[in-house]
Every structure is written in C-alpha cells, then in structure tokens.
Amino acid sequence: MLTKILFVVSIFVAAVYGATKINGVEGDVLTLECNPGTSIDVKSAFYGNNVDPACGDASALTTLQSLTSGKQTYVVTLNSDTFSSDCSVDREQTFIVKFNCISNLLTQTTSQGDTSTISCSNGEKIKIINAAYKSGSSCLDLNALSIVQGLCDDESSCSVAATDTVFPDSDCAANKQETLSIAYKCTSATGPVYTRYGASGCSVTAAVVYKGTMAGAKHDGSGSGSNYQCLTSSPTYDANNGAVNSDRGYIYGMELKLDTTDSTSVIDLGNDESTIPCTVCQVISSKSVFMVPGLLTCPSGYAAEYTGYLASDSTDGTTSKSYICLDKDASYAGATSNNQGLLYLTEIRCGSLSCSTFTDNAEIPCAVCSRAITSS
Image 1 (cartoon, rainbow, N blue to C red):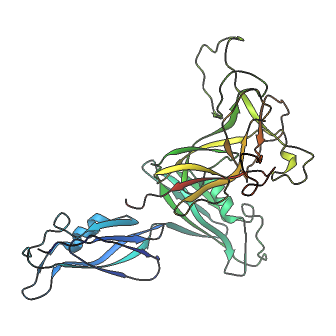
Image 2 (cartoon, rainbow, N blue to C red; image 1 turned 90 degrees about the vertical axis):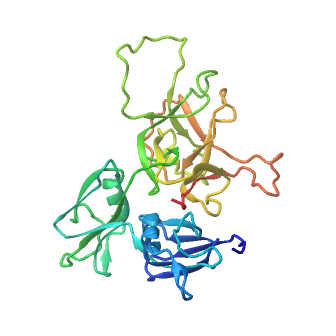
Image 3 (tube, rainbow, N blue to C red; image 1 turned 90 degrees about the horizontal axis):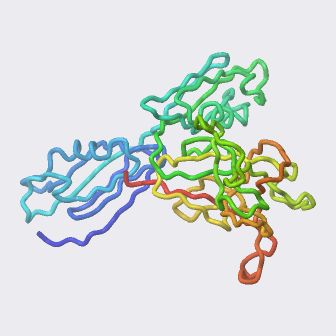
C-alpha cells in the first residue's frame, strides 16, 4: 500500500444549515466540528472502495455515530484502528461522511400568568443561555435574560413566573399577551478553578463552587498572608474557636479604596470603601484558565470568563500582595469604612515600562481567559 502524507482538515459548521459532507482518503485525519451548543449527528458514512468488486466497512455509519455521539468536535483518523474494512491492502480506500449539527439546548415556552419550571438531574446544574419575555417582536423586557440567570443559574431546579411582577421592565401594553421563552443546558463542571473578584456569580461557561467575601492581611500590617482569599460566606468552625492572641495571623475583609478626587475613575466613586464579593468558579469544559494583564479581550482561540482592572495593595503598603483582576462590572456590598484590608487599582508607571508602549498613570485592564476543549 502506498505511503500517504498525513494532513488535517477542520470543518466548522453552523447549527442550522443542513448536512455537511466531508471526503477523505485512507491515512487522512479529519475534524468534524459544530458550533458551541450543538453536537454532531452523523447521517451517513462510507469507508472503503466502490470500484467493482466493492469492499469496505459495512459498520462505518454505526461506528462513527458511536464515536461522535453528543460531541461538539471529533477527530477521526482514517485507518484500520478506526474502521474494520474487508478491502485488501493494495486497494485505496475513501471516506465520505454527512452530518448535521443539532442543538444541545433544552427549551421551554410559558404563557403569561403561568410558571416555567426547569430542572437538571444527576448532580448537573442549570446554565441559562437565553431568555425572553415578550409579545411577538413588538415589545419585550430587555432584562429578561439577566433576571432568569439570577433565578436559575447553578441551581438543580428553579421556577420562574411569567408575570409582569417578575419582569417589571416590559414595554408591552396591558392588552398584549406575553410569553416567557427559556433556553438552557445542564452542565457539570470538569475544568480548572478560578476566583472571580467583585462578582457573586460565574460566566455562562463556568459553575459556582462557592460564594464569599474577598479577604486578606491588614494594609498597614507587616505579617500574615501575602495573597488574597475568597472567604466563604457560610463558614463553619471547630468547637474550640480559640481566644484573642496577638501571636496569630489575622485576616480582614477587603475594602475597595478609590481616589475620590479622580473624576476619571474607571469605577464609580460611590463604591469607595465598599467590601468586595467574590465567587470561586469551575470552568465547565476547559484546558486552562489564566489572566492577561493589559487587555480587555482574550487572545485568539480563548474566551473571556470576565474582564476588569488589575488591583492590589497600595505601593506604600507594608505587605506585598498578589495582583488580581477586579471585575469591571463588580457589584459591591456597600461601604464599611473599617480601613483594615484595602484594595487599590493598579496604574502604569513609565520608566522600565516604555511610554512609547504604555500610558503613564493609566489603570490597567485585565481579562481572565479560558480555552474550551474541542476534541472531546
């Protein structure tokens, strides 16, 4: 049999455009790929030689259906490890497959006045992908998605009433009959874990592990930890809690410290001295999670879990702290003004960082990025 040169073909398919056909020959490596939120549905497959006398793998279709079931992407190698062909080794074999991309989303539509109840089983959690409360295309509540996400995300089940009380910002007239449409999926997180500072929730690509409050060492102390913690909002303690002892390390709730004279602040000055929520998130399907300081977008091939601004202790602080990415859409818990643990936005200082590239005194954006696994 002739030695073949290996090459890779990748096809990216929209979910709504019918069957996609891919051809190959023995030795090729082909990638069958659908859009996120959809999976491969193989309709026909042939591996063999049609020239009389025809030969091949009579089970090519069922083999490929089994290998691709429920998957967004599958890489198939055209050789005897994948297919059981009855062709002799001197006969070149070809491969033809046709497949659709079908939606993985669960949907429910509920009439006004009724209640929509959705649920997941086997330990999986709800992740809302889309939601609309509207009457045809003439009127709607623009906040419907965020409302339903707030009620249902990361729950095993939830109920949402299709009423103007739940969706108070609908611009539909009283005589317009509205419907609530929800699209969601059931997810179980398997990827790496990261902490989202400034938020009480995770992105649509991650599941909540737990929620808490950002905590760390005292801003003018010289000891304790140098890193920040997301201290759970539901702590439990040993029966022996201990007594006041100056020989122990202390941890304090962090407060956001802003320059209240800076009218150009990237964060509302009304949040000065507010405590900072945090959420530990696990990415549903990812190989990696990392922060990129200096960008509000992620590198090509990566998706943003969230974006924000680089933050840490003051440059005049006595204990060096780690840098974190503070969510630009953070929801703060209100000012406490205890001035114990303090968090400051981080600015560029030119010098070793050339002003031809960096902007002096500029707050530094950041993005926390993940990369989805596409070969499973």
